Image 1 (tube, one colour):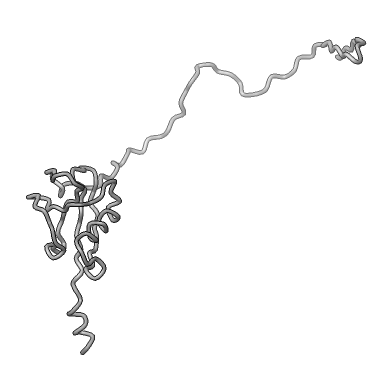
Image 2 (cartoon, rainbow, N blue to C red; image 1 turned 120 degrees about the vertical axis):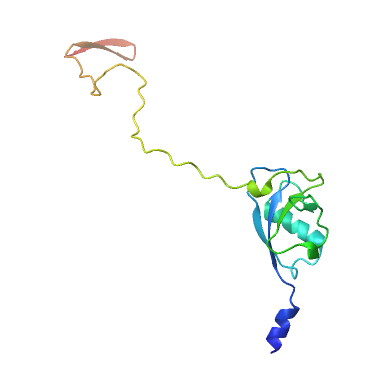
Length: 149
């Protein structure tokens, strides 16, 4: 019996989805808000800044449709969507339509090599010709002439 009494005294955790203000490409982040760990609204805003990996410090939280400011942890509703902003005003976007776009399936085509030159050349090495060559060797100022065949 004491376990159920303790469980009912605990503040409920809330799962929310938060978007970045004015960012049409940020798909939103699902966050779990535990009032036992976040006792004040300022600590919650700091938690949002880290959770969203935002390039700005989150200082305001808005509802996505009307742009109303949320100012207390008690005003957060489980399963709701919110928009996090810095010092700027709410920017009206259709945040619910933002999704992660998956790449389109490409048709499987055979990959052909790129032709950079129209020259047709054998890939074999050139064989050395059977001609004589002259090699000059200089040793201590004396000239020696050697011929190889």
